[in-house]
Image (tube, rainbow, N blue to C red):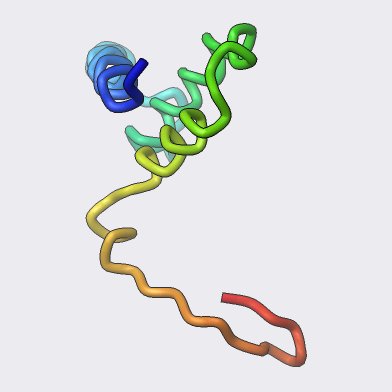
Length: 83
């Protein structure tokens, strides 16, 4: 079972729904809504989907032109480690 075809199909279905009814919530982008719909419909069967595949699906839905350009740096903010 490949991750990308599943998410591409689901993304296409979410696009159609959004054209007809708009986003589920105004603040939801297409990647987030795609993942939310996946979780809503398939959580009963999530134990059948390997954890590594679930992680790849999450990673793919978080990729956007903006996030691809982001760089992270480890810092200490008031003695608290962070990125």
